[in-house]
Length: 394
Image 1 (cartoon, rainbow, N blue to C red):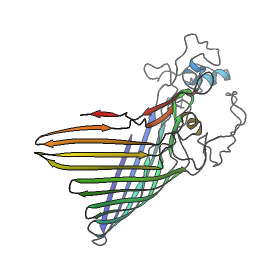
Image 2 (cartoon, one colour):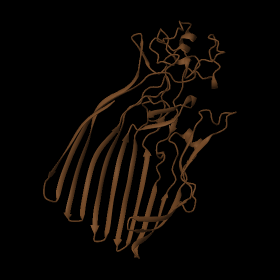
Image 3 (spheres, helix red, strand yellow):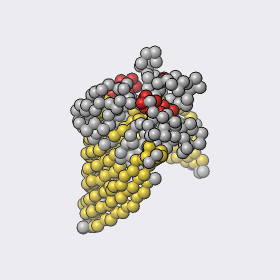
Image 4 (spheres, helix red, strand yellow):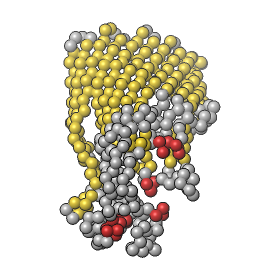
């Protein structure tokens, strides 16, 4: 559930200068409750430490369900305590509950909630018709949420602080717009494949995004030209650690000696760096450029047209954590070209088109679907989502 109230006001200091300010108060309350993982193996012996389900998992499924004492089944079993599962408020069709929190003898939903506000300040200057300059400082957020894997903490909201200056101009037949921006992305949310092939979302450190973008257009008679380009430099400003709660930027947290009910974990364990300071944000190319040229002319009772367009995009990381990036690999740069030709008259039009003329196998995303990929005997399994191949139609 998300709630918000917002408003904005503008004031003309002069006929050419306008100031705008606005704010938004928000409240979110997100919950998840239920069961995640494998059910009990029919051949499972309750006395076994590790049930023989797929991958011998103890991180999901019934081993992580709550018992009447508040411990998970596995922890209670190891400690020699009562392993009776708490099932009186389990969802219909599930054996027990492992996605939740134990409180006052009951299992309650895992919860992520918060309140806060965002704001926007903007100033525009219009020295004459067809010419405008602006400056903006604005903020935004995404609400926090809950990981469905048992035992993982919820993740917090993340915030964006945007500082931007830009221009919008018209010089006769020529249009030119642009913007330069500096953004701070605080505690940004990122995802990776965790244990048992379940996606894990956690908050990183901060990221810094600097960029410039521009577009230009020209129209003369039947000729229309448009082009746009962007440069984006997006990097994290501190190391991101394997343990989300590690407050040290060097990821050198030493975990406290482990609870005796979980003896399979080392007594002391140093945190690891999963993405080093300066790592580029994923799926964010440095360069992107596109252009379109279109010409229309009179032919008989109607108008004919021809158009060519292209887009070029640079390469990018596919994932933020290094261990996912090593397996999945990087997204390659690509260039796409499209062609169109057509004729319109009265109430009819016909068009012959060809998109991705050179049949470029551009990659939209790359990802790993198996948490054990690369661990013998399971080979690496990288999945690639391609763009549409060459398509010709009438």
